[in-house]
Image (cartoon, rainbow, N blue to C red):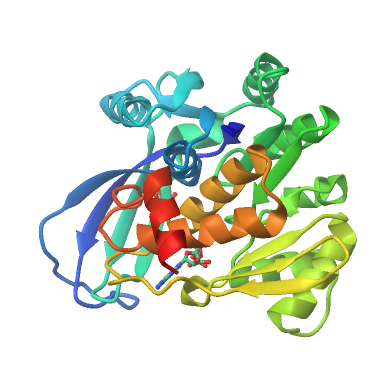
Length: 310
Ligand code: ATP
Ligand code: RIB
């Protein structure tokens, strides 16, 4: 079954320098030739979801510049419906400066630009247009905090399933956590949410996720890098899904976005929590095998083949 998914989040152009090792503070490292890729957690997860077989509408903002035109061309080339993207005059399109080392680890600094001009009205208009078309939304937080809150509240008010990728964690998500979004933090983000909710000490991922799930009343899915994901349901019952070992780790940029896009796409198609997470994990492990956030995001057939081979 094909799922319909609305993705709300940032879109960037990624400028990437491959280096031997990541620079420390004040250090200059010299790498190979500059690479340019489509990026941003919203744009990336929209592409991952389309490749996994979903119909996807993307909601975000670009500047009225060449980078913005390129970002939209990239999205549409992948089959993402982008008519709800707001064009913001006199603002630069989002741009990420990324350094990737020989082990595939990265450092990222984002110039958010137009992503931080996405308004509540932009989001509410887009959600209104998708009534009757979708019942699942995926929201990430590299955009205006008010837009994040409007997206989660608007999705839940319509009775839609809402996956909230809190990357990065912003305090404003506190306004949405009692609306039962399925939250998908990585380890560091889980710790930040735990503390935002008043948690004390430094519990392990399972206890922290169960604590967050008790507050949200919904599942919490923690991405654990090469260890896979931890899925805790609304009752705090936790299951670990180990990562499929990658053939070679070239670039982990966008692995989380791949997981989120495929996970949300599979939920939209009617999969249960664990099955959707399994597909997301397999897709994310395939995505680390080439440079760039989107280059090696797999198609549905590749996810099927890798799942069958496990
Ligand atoms: P990012 O912000 O870079 O997109 P993230 O921190 O949100 O990533 P991670 O936990 O690093 O997310 O990775 C997401 C998922 O990708 C993991 O849960 C795992 O399934 C897969 N993954 C990441 N790194 C590897 C790896 N080295 N080998 C196999 N799978 C990996
Ligand atoms: O998650 C990876 C993404 O984070 C990159 O594509 C970059 O644009 C930043 O938003």
